[in-house]
Image (cartoon, rainbow, N blue to C red; front, side):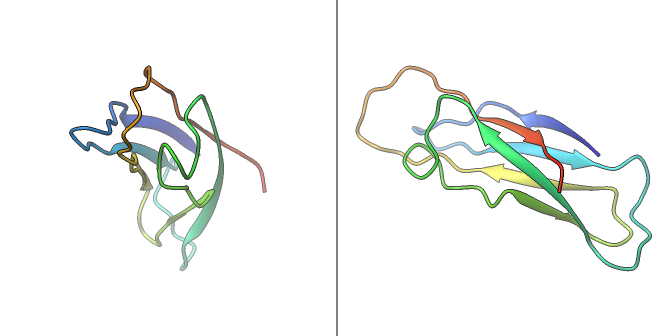
Length: 91
């Protein structure tokens, strides 16, 4: 599997989500979803800067990709730009 930030410009105000796409080399023909694990790092804090991500994404049967949506949390703090890095992990 591979991962690409298909919309890397998430923002708090105005609210704009970010999107990562996890793709397989071919369509999933297993008869059920394939679960892909990922890890989250970067300078932004899960739960206060963005809604916590689950750490897994399911690629449905007959599909070749699935998306992970990053939703920023708009707070009153004035902050410098922060990063969220999503990488595929084993398991």
